[in-house]
Image 1 (cartoon, rainbow, N blue to C red):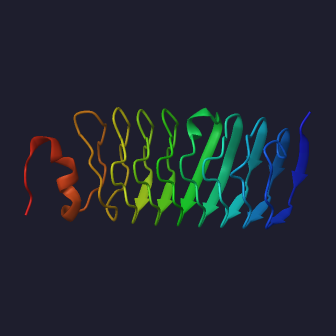
Image 2 (tube, rainbow, N blue to C red):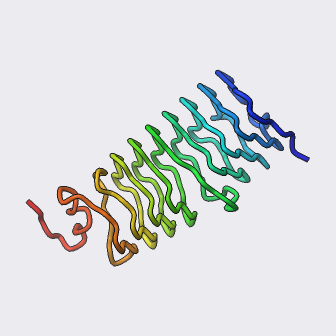
Image 3 (spheres, rainbow, N blue to C red):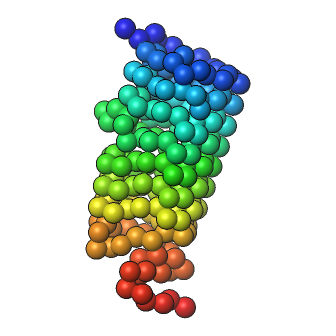
Length: 189
């Protein structure tokens, strides 16, 4: 049975490999914590906020993220695809998520604000009504994704193939529309 932690504030903690396993955190905040060595197992975060935390390369298999917000966090090379999919809800503000994976997840309504999403794997991900506000999407992969009603208007460096990604009513800026035409070798000037 997991240990239950409610309404706690954790600050400047460097967690070891198994320290958080079999824990449930609800309405907790984590500030300036380091999770890079963690190999999460049976961990649940509900209504939690992470600020200025480091998750680079952390193994977050078997983690439940339910209404979790990440602010100013380093989250490079993290595979979210193995997270518990039940009530999965995350939001990112000012985060670096380069080379992370969201493969096949349902990210409906997820917000990415001022994030670096370089080479992120969104393949077969449901991004319906998600918002990419001022995000760098260089080499991000959207093959077989559903991005209906997603908002890319202020984001840049994306290349999305409309024949392989559902984009009905998605919003793009005129300046970046070239990212939808790349495969046709059409130049927009």
